[in-house]
Image (tube, rainbow over all chains, first blue to last red; front, side, top):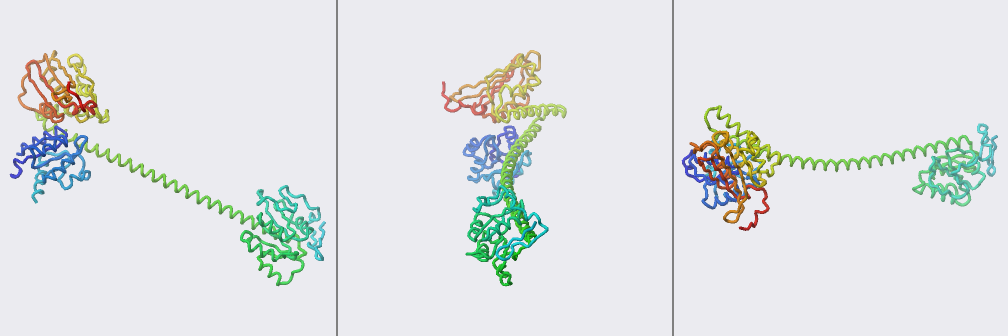
Length: 124
Length: 423
C-alpha cells in the first residue's frame, strides 16, 4: 500500500450490505478511513457533504436507483472515484465516464489496485 | 346448287360446285344477331363470336356475303352505306371489314381512309371487293388506304372464306395475346402488392424482433448484475465463514449458501417483488418445520417485505436459527423461540418496523467469545441494510435480538407512509 493513500477517507457506496461491510473491513485493514458505507444515493450525497471524503468507491446499481448522481457530485468536487459494477463497462452511464472501473466479484487486492489507479490518474 | 349471282353486269360470285350448301336459303341467324338494319346494342359478342362488318350499297350483295360467310362463329353486321358502316364502327369492335369500293357518296376508299385515321379502328383489317377497279393503280390505292387485301368480283367463295378465316384467326390470336397480356399485367401488379405486403410484414416482424432483443438484452443485463452480486455475496460468505476445520467450514458454508439459495427461490417465485414476511421466515426454518407452532412461535401482522430488505432479514433469521440450534434455545429439548414483528409509531411520529427474536428455557446464554460472520449478519449487516438499530441482549435466560428501522425500508410501497400523524 502506497504511503500517500494511508489515512485517506474513502466513501463506500454499495447497496449489498454484506459486500459493503467486507469492503469496509478490507479498506480499514489497509489503512483507510471508511466513510459510510452508504446503501443509497441520498445517504452517499449527505456523507460527501459531511464528513466529506478523499476518494469514492461506487457500485452502479443501488437497488432501484443508480449511483450516477453520486458520481456527478464527486466529479464536481474533484474527488476521484472508482466504479464497481455487476454489469460490464459498456453499460456504464455517462456520469461514470473516465473513472476506473471493475466488474464484480472483486477481491481485496484488486480493489486496492483500482483505488491506486484512480489516485494516480487524479494526480497526473 | 351453286348459283352465280350478279351485281350489275359482273357476278359477285364465281360458280362453285364444291359448296353446294351455298345455294340454299340464307340460314337462320343466331339469336344474338340483331341484323335488322339497326346497329346492334352489344359492343362485343360475349359468346366468342367474331364481328365482321360487311359494307355494300346493294342489299342483295350483303345477303350473298352472309350466305357465303355463314358460320356459327361469325356475326355479320350489315351496312349499306359508308355512314352506316362508320356508325357501326363507333359502337362495336370488328375483327374484319369487307368493303365494296363502288358506293354512292363516300366511296370504299374514302371510308377505308377514315377508318384507318381513327385510332380505335386503325388496326381493323379491310378486304376490298370491287368489280371495276382492277387496274394496278387502284390496288395500290387500296393498300395505301390501309387495306390488307383486295379481291375482284366475281369472288371465289372458297378464297373469300379462307381469307376471312385467316383474319378471324389473326383477330382471335390478337385477343388472346391481349388477354394474356392483361393477365400478366394483373399478375405483376398482384405480385407487387404481395411483395409490398411482405415488406410491411417483414418490417413489422423486424421491429418485433428488435423489441424482443432489447427486452432480452435488458433482462440479460439484469440477470448478469444479479448473478454477479450473488457471486460477490458467496465470496464474502466464504471469506467470513472462517471457522475451525475444513470439515466445519464446509458444513457452515454449505448451510449459508443453502439459505441464500432458498431465499433466491422465494424471490424468483415472487418475481422479485415483495415477499410475505412470515413466508420469508418459514423458508429459513424449513428444516425445523415440526417445531413451528410448538417451540418456535411466530406472530405478527401480515407484512410484505421489499425484495431489497428480504435478503438481509432472511440471512439474519438463518444465522439466529443456526445459533439457536447449536448453542441456544433449540439445542435442548425445552427451549423456545418467540419471533414477532409489528409496525409502531416512533418518537418523531414516523412508522417504525420492529422485529424481535426472543429465546427462553434454553441452556444458559454465554457471550460469544468472538465476532464471527453470524454476529456481523445479525448486527451490522442488518443495520446497514435496513438503516436501523439492532439491540442484542445475551441475558442468561435467553438471547434477545431486536431490530428497529423505518417501516419504509422494509415494507414495499407502504401507502400509509406519507403524512402519518402522531398519536
